[in-house]
Image (cartoon, rainbow, N blue to C red; front, side, top):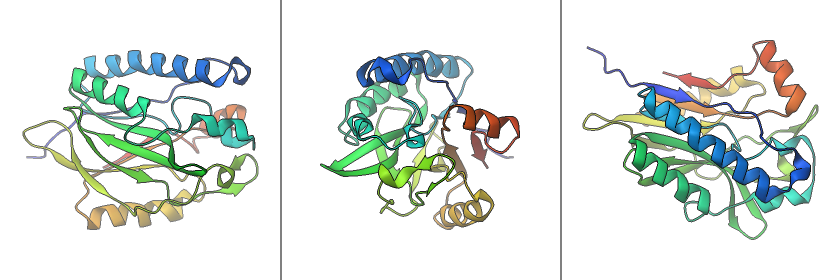
Length: 218
């Protein structure tokens, strides 16, 4: 009989406008996600995926150096630490996308994997970085990932699945998904969690057309 694990995906709009200041933007989004994570736990979610760059807007629609201030260390930064506490409190595993600073001036689009007991399991760094119109200037902000396609054991105990995570490469996804999911499957992955964000009206238009949505591939 198949093992059923309830998974959840959060796609949330930004709380404050860009001119509110980066600390205020970040705090308001983390506060918002605390409530959404609690809601997911009440719905008996066991594995939860947050959207790409979840603690702010999709700033890659512009090229401004001020967004470098949104970077954090992984796993030693404050956001991963906070999500570890929430994972432990609610007994669910969380995929936490972070704008990672590996060293000064060296940044990645990263997803941290946190288990249901709050343990940090590892991270994935987004591999394919777009830099194109109409607003995906990601090479201004991120280096291509260098960790391959890791698979993590995560989720409810005692029977835990092997769960594969990565932020979504949303353009040309028909070509990318089989390659990435295939690499995960070759390592024993059973679930692919793919979170992403999009810039304002562009993201809304693409979602209205059914082109872009949070995804859970089983």
